[in-house]
Amino acid sequence: MKKKRLAKILIPILVVLLIGGTIGGYVWYNLTYHPSKWLAEGDDAVADRPFEEVINSLDMMDNTWETALPQTAVHDLIAAHFAAPLPEGKTEKKAIVIGYDGCRVDLFQLLGTAKKSAINTLLHDGGHAIFTYAGGVNYPAENTQATSTAPGWCSMLTGVLADVHHITDNGIVKEVEPKTLLLSLVEDGTIDKSAFYVSWDGHFSKKDATYIGEKQYAKAEGVNATYQRAFFDPGTKCNILSDIKKKDCSDFIFSTLEYTDHQGHDTGFTPANPKYVSAFRDAESTGADIIEAIKARETYATEDWLILITTDHGGIGGGHGGPSFEERITFIVSNKEIPLDAAN
Ligand SMILES: [Zn+2]
Image 1 (cartoon, rainbow, N blue to C red):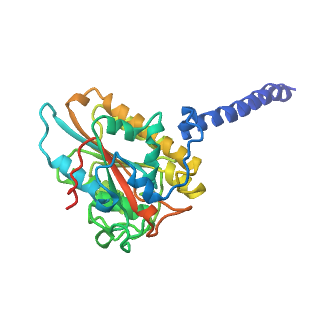
Image 2 (image 1 turned 135 degrees about the vertical axis):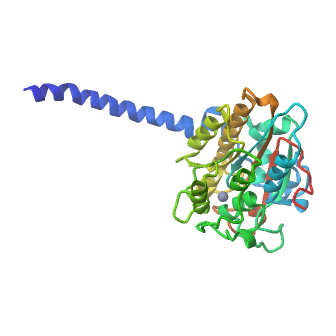
Image 3 (image 1 turned 90 degrees about the horizontal axis):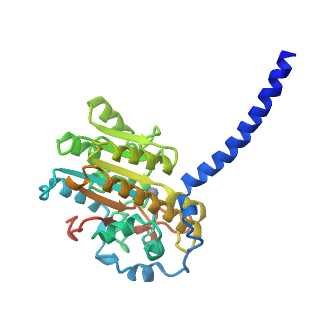
């Protein structure tokens, strides 16, 4: 009898919890995984126009695609930022890279209609945007490295190309040398600590992940570099925000968001695809929240921040890795001026 009475009480409670949990989980997932849904952007994909025509019309760019810098410029800008003397009134240098994986630069034609945009925020604050290229050499020359994720980010983190860092594709474990900025800046005493925030398991969370050896090296040698992976982009955002909200936050943060790459692979890398545009809005909304958190730091007024937004490659159809124009031309947006001889 007692067991029956217990079941009468427990079963309804379990049913309520199950239904409530399912509805609550669905709402939470949509709120966090697709913030753009709540920005009322609607279906704002654009007509399918030739890539070259669109990128030639982007008037926010400081250079042309023909004079694009190699993506290693990201490394050089960060190194130059930390090497430069502190501006007057500033007591500490910081830098962050917000990476939008697989984000085509022709999406910039949609910046004018963005309700919340990290790129617009940087540009309105006196920032700059330039064309860069993936693939080792500029289009249309035959590319010397795949327009894939691992080679791209590795070139930005090390400042050298695949012939030196040997990351010719995803699924190759990088030797400790050449060191990434995450290690070198801490080891040479330029900064106290660095952090790498991602959701892609190919960075440092699988046996054949690019930086798995580097992560082990950092741990063994006591280098103050954090490697943290979340399951999805909202988790990456939480990890970045909780770092930035600390009084003594990481001096150099490198991060990648997968919104655009995932959606590009699923439904197509083109601004004519509303889902790809929505993914761009998601990345932009996340980036804007990160910049807002930086500006909200108690010590922001005395900090000299370099904020970069970039991508590892473009895409065409449902993929990337190849030599096409759409996969090759990338970008850097910075809160500071970008010397156009940065990589020379
Ligand atoms: Zn990628």
